Amino acid sequence: MLPLERMQTLLSNLDKINDFIGRSVSWLALCMVLMTTLVVILRYGFNLGWIAMQESINYMHSLLFLLGIAYTLQHDAHVRVDIFYRKYSPKTKAIINILGTLFFLFPVALFIAWISWEYVASSWEFHESSPETGGLAGVFLIKSLLLILPFLLFLQGIAELLRNILQLHSSSFDNQHSSIT
Image (cartoon, rainbow, N blue to C red; front, side, top):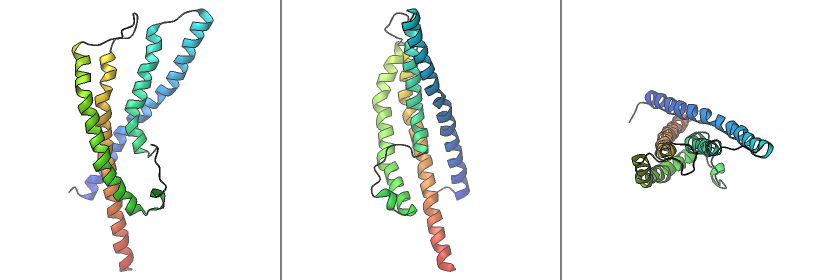
């Protein structure tokens, strides 16, 4: 097992990676709103439109959600039905989070990577681009996000494991320390 200081350093570095990615792609939400507004103004105000401009909104949407999912996990912003969870002690929550990461998050991330591999590889083989005339090239690049998503989730899963192991260690240290005094 890693020493506590190394675990904290690794946790900090993993959090920095997903935090940077999440904050970076969050700007795409604003870009999507601006681009959608521009598409509507151009189409209905000037009778102009470009498929590539419309598809760029879909590309930004894909980037935002597929790259931002690990950031959302990091900040515990996923939907959680916590009727019982919120009442538990930090130690019990840490145990539940460790089990959830090991038995749900990691298997789901690996499953997504496994089922996406052939789909993404096929897209790369043909350098898939938009089927629309004037559409964006690089559909294969956007489909590659299906492999980056589980990678980022896996990294954040490691961070969550470390965070909860440190929480357990902190809880046991607090319990030992309080019984001494």
